[in-house]
Length: 157
Image 1 (cartoon, rainbow, N blue to C red):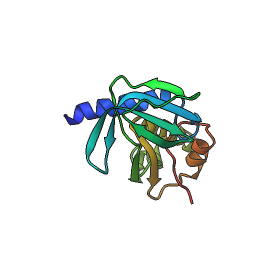
Image 2 (cartoon, rainbow, N blue to C red):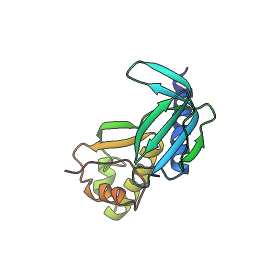
Image 3 (tube, helix red, strand yellow):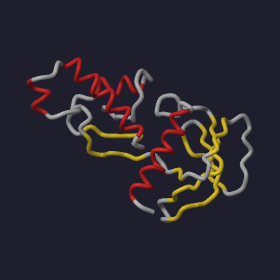
């Protein structure tokens, strides 16, 4: 599988998740993904034609046998590959453009708009958590946590 096809698969997976509001803030209590291939990173294999039950934003069960939906929202993955969310451990989300442009040309409110757009783009690329390496990310992290804007979790302790 080429890197381009992996990116397409990842984008499709994230689009499915976002289409039902399953981002970091607005999770459904129970979601059942059927007809998906699951990447198992611990064993470096792909489990084909699997079903995945997600409860309270956590994977509760992965099985090649049918799983009873029991009031879960059912999403047919149509054979696409489902992977866990990615984590970016060194990111500069608060620098959405060059530092010189930020210092000399952009108003801080405009910078906030750019950061908001980048947060959503990060989520759409499959990143469900990121660590901002040095930027003042408390505001965007809080807005994401409160569901005001879509984006990955950003720890701010």
